[in-house]
Image (cartoon, rainbow, N blue to C red):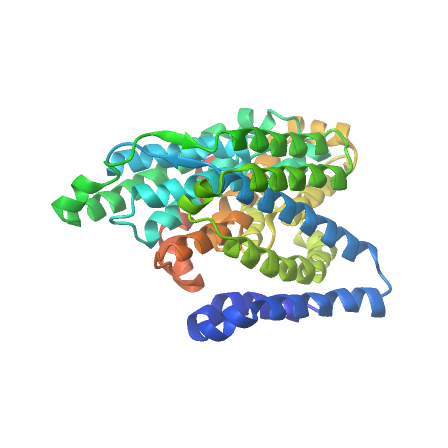
Length: 418
């Protein structure tokens, strides 16, 4: 039953490169079919309902958050004043990384990707989008539980709200600083190669302004819905608030704002179809991880970092985070329980290095592939709809992840977790 997940990942990686027209017509059918194979196996052959309902609940919560933020942010148009020099680009990404901790990586990415494309449009290339995914859609959001889904799950289980900020800020600063330094070198070369008239043109015609102000209140409503989940509010009520905010935003916002943002539902459709298959086919993968986790012995913190990170690159990082958190709790002396908030809070206080390793692995390595985190695929889709040539699935890994991201994350792990 691992085969459907593997087939889907291979399809996402290979088919857009080799069979693009065929894939773009049929990927919804392929994703749903593979997902239904797994769901049918558990329901009809195993008679096991709870894994399916849990996966569907996670998927509904995921698509409610992603979709509502996508719709609401599409009604906000940010004009960026001045020339998009390398320094200004670095400053923009830095602000985006900070904002990811307030709006979540999904909210910040959906809000900022369109102004990022516009301010660089005279010289934009795939690496501008890739580094945006690195910083805004992933690494930036490790300072608060709002920033990334695995950290939010940790908060729901009992990790104190400010634990991430107090414990992870040095690692965040180190990794963000190195990634931005590499980006500055790349962007400086790109900028100097651009013809002088293009350098002068860079967004000089725009003034800083925010259109669609009313949608900021809807963003606040979505964040409120996320936070009340931590207070024990039923998941369907929280999701209902998100959907209501998205509908109100769509019908209240002036259509010209969305038109100027070149807003379409295609990126959301792609994410919705593909992640239905991913969440469904993940069920046996997560079961395998949970059943074999105890065979790992007693991992070091560096092992936790690499195991959580490696799997978070290709699996959903939220259940991967919970899998290794469960392992660490069971190996704790005395053993602790995942569903006891007081014990989780005690674990965060007594063994912060292990929890930090799991948290950093889940958040940082989500940037390693297009499917490592929900907003990655959506950012790529928005960029492609803006006629930006993006690297393929393997191109992303071999051109950016392996030569740039992994050495930085390896250095961070060696310094802080060894």
